[in-house]
Amino acid sequence: MPLVLSIIMTFVVSLISTLRSLGPTPAFLVTWPTAWALSWIAAFPTLLIVLPLVRRIVACLVTDPSEAK
Image (cartoon, rainbow, N blue to C red; front, side, top):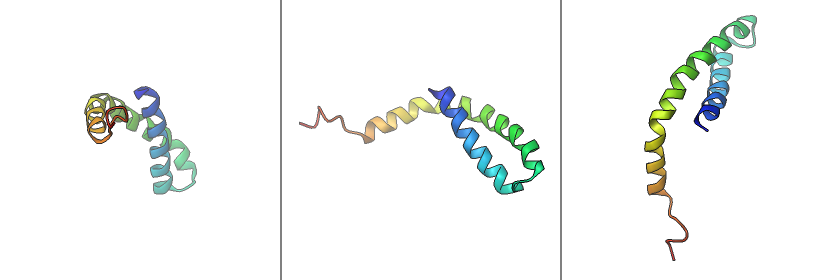
């Protein structure tokens, strides 16, 4: 799951930010794949490191319905 999530998220975010910076130009088509690769290289390990902490935070925020009764 972290692999697929990081690929999809970096795809969308790098697409939007590169398009916003350069506009729909030929430079966008050349620049965006590199921006995507660099963002994925940073995002995937970060996701693996942060995921256990996020799970604990979510567990604190969400109540199990079977325990609420």
